[in-house]
Image (cartoon, rainbow, N blue to C red; front, top):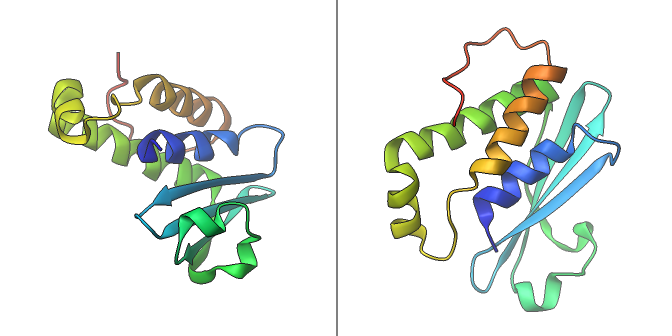
Length: 133
């Protein structure tokens, strides 16, 4: 699993026709499942924890323990996730990210997709960092 890429893809997916985005983080053995639901211009976020990913991967969300939920505007969520990923890239660089996280390269293309969608579709008035190349 590529946690950062999955997070970026999940948030980017909110800009498309599929109203629910799900992705999981493997905490070995636990699973932390994010469920993002589009609700007009808002997004309902829910994070569930399951004790064993090998037994829970196909389980309904409600079988997990709800550990956090919130409703945010899609624009704010897109902005914050995009800027956080950009900060990781600025701190570590592509080579440093690969050295630290070993199995995966920095998901630059997915970050660029999210940035493009956010700038095109959200009326975000927050300051934006320099676009990645």
